[in-house]
Amino acid sequence: MGSMAANRGQGGIQQLLAAEQEAQHIVNAAKSAKMARLKQAKEEAEKEIAEYRAQMEREFQRKLAESSGDSGANVKRLEQETEVKICKLKEDAARISQDVVAMVLKHVTTVKN
Image (cartoon, rainbow, N blue to C red; front, top):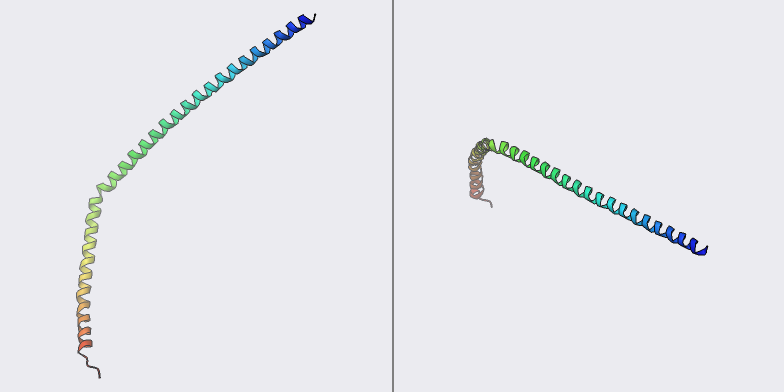
């Protein structure tokens, strides 16, 4: 009778080991599936990022082209404004320099005792 109980115990241990192995296979399969899904998600995200980056680059290039298209006009306008300012400065300098020369001459030629 002791030997039958031992056999039954041995059978129970075998069943437990088999169940444990099966559980390990299920866990491993789940881990593999999870890793595969994560890899797929990462690839999808990278693809979306690349598409977004390309779209932003196209948008940037378009805006750059638009703004540089009229930069010729901007340069022309800036050149005109600068020319006007230079003329104004020359006029002011010419007007003031006469006053300065007169003031210096007066100062230099004034004799002080």
